[in-house]
Image (cartoon, rainbow, N blue to C red; front, side, top):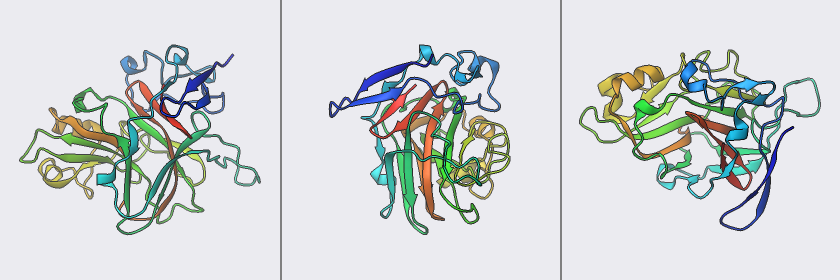
Length: 275
């Protein structure tokens, strides 16, 4: 039997009824490329239609430190906690029936083409964490477009002190459009929820600025997450971990279930849950 918890919004006092576990058709598979040690806790393993170990990791309200990072936002894009969206696993059906990967909501993102950019993240809780200690990164993307032609998907951005080269700052950015299976779905599709394993084989990352040039991981020559870690062995997260989108093609859609090692950050309409 699935558990349901009554979680209290810490800032406004509103009560939010959240599902303690994903439903049977909405589970999180073990991220591709993850080691046995990392999956031993069972947080990301799918067993019997439910997330194994989730009973031992109840959702906790975690909203106060997540939000739009203004200094990394350009123009007038939008990143809003919202209900849905529901995906269309059966394009021939009228109704959209695929729920968000966790709970009932997600992080809705709208970014125009050109110079617009947005970053939604956490500037507090990951500061000082070593890049070498991050083994699993992943998230789910919903692209609300009729076609993915000319669409650039949102990525993950880690602001770090690289401790390599002359600069003490760089952003490490995951490029879902350049990733290949098993990091990205074998076939990317619009209007459905699909999982991207940003730390798995086939991933594509680059470092901004002089750091990217120094290590050879640039937007035009991205490298895998494993390679990135080997080239930046002493890098530490400095300013933030977040979801980023822009400055290229327009995007309308959503993101959910950001996984960092054994913790999953579930974006819901009124809060962010840590599972």
